[in-house]
Every structure is written in C-alpha cells, then in structure tokens.
Image (cartoon, rainbow, N blue to C red; front, side):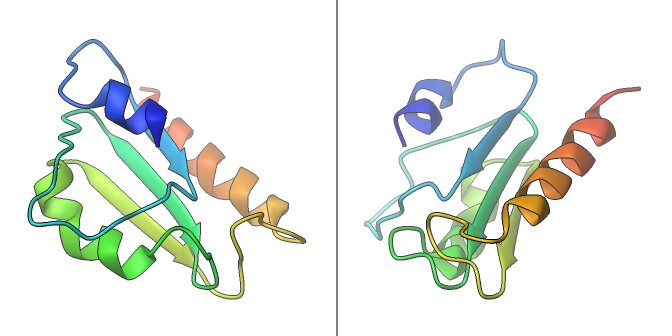
Length: 96
C-alpha cells in the first residue's frame, strides 16, 4: 500500500506491480497511477478486494490491469507459480 501511494502521481516510473494491495472503499480514489500498472489479488484475499479494484480501475489510471485469481488468499499459498507467470507476462509486455 505504501509503494502504491508513493508511486501515485509520479511520471518517472516505467510500471507498477501491486500484489494483494490492501484496499478500502472511500468517497473518492486518492491514487492516480499514469504508468502501466498491474494489480494482482485472489478472490479469497482477506485484505484486498478485487471487485473494488476493478470498480475503481479507470479512476486509478488509464493503463491499469486488475487480475483476480480464483482460490487465492492474501498469502498466495500454493499459487506462487500463477503469481510469477502473471508478473512475467506483464513485464514482457512492457519490453519492446
């Protein structure tokens, strides 16, 4: 959560990857990420609401991807291979 807040509004970062970033509903979105951004979470995450991220995606930034993995909790037990693959695909898409 700290890294996402620090990245908010900056224009000198190539990309942001946020894994199981804690979420909270509020009256307005307080972060803006202009760079390519990937949010990864699971549908059983106790701290990160994938539906909320999806709802706020367009308000967060113009190039935000939210991926919610079924059966994955906050700690990614037994799903680290899916985490690595999704991260690698995103990063490969940034390299020309």
